[in-house]
Length: 388
Image 1 (cartoon, rainbow, N blue to C red):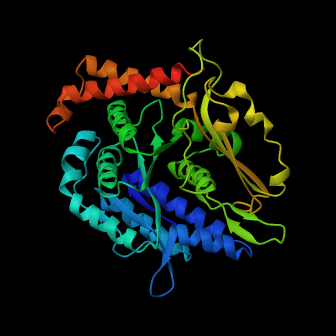
Image 2: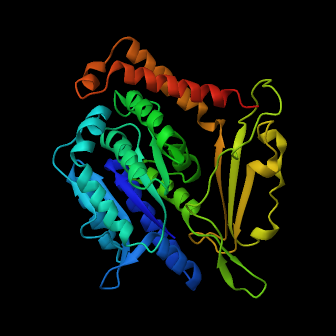
Image 3: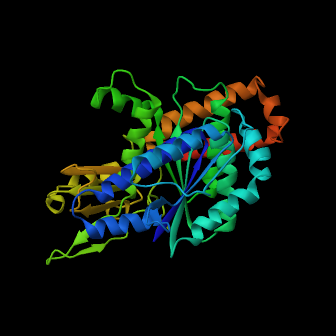
């Protein structure tokens, strides 16, 4: 069961390189052959020289970041990227989502699909495809959304996951709210799961928990990769004889309301960070005796779902990244509601004054496309706001 990643734009390629480094280091530490084998089969293949090669495709409209990512991987001495796994041209898409989605994406569709196809064919069995991208810039958001659409069309039965890096609220590019709105409204219809890391939240982790004084994007990317790796790594369970077996962990999960779930009563108001579903991943020492009852509290979930249906836990005695114990929570909840609402409101205010709209129109995005995106996201905000 292998995962093929597609790294898009500067952010996606930098996070992807850090992610594979974390996964490789974690898999190879200690004497854990079953764990190492399961992890390497999932994320790496071997070339004719026996080197570990990431199951990844690297895409950017500028070659600089891709070249740096490939060089850093090779210099690690543990793993590398494939020699023909990347595509870049000196024709940056700037920060315009429309340029990436309407121009560069279609223009290079055949090349990108061929790169993905080659990587997929290296897999005995593909469990999913994961696109790593930002939502603020041009290539990551615009080309990333187009590539996700292509993945959905080409591999309709595969599990497609998007990992999104959410921009700083203070702003990275002037049109980031437009780009974010257009990206999310499309991915909401295309992707099976969307994992989000907020730069502001990760920045606070770097400052308050890691006590880094001068925080760089590299520091932020390392934290994102570490947290994402702790979710994606296999969870091996041991039987009474100490024999390890694989549990269905990795890309094969769904953190969403069970199909067919219906409301048992009318909405009566929102509550503290209400969740649709939570997945708790425990790794390391004493995981089977860990107390997780707090996550089964009905107050955490919507009134129309039982905790048994909404809460899932995976437990593995194999530690992650040299930590004696670790816990990772993946939550489909109201946690992203405030930044999502702010982004939609800011994008709408810009659109109402027609700021920068002409730059999108000239590449093929109409004002109706903007309105459709706003409508879709406002419905999403409303749905999460009304959870009870």
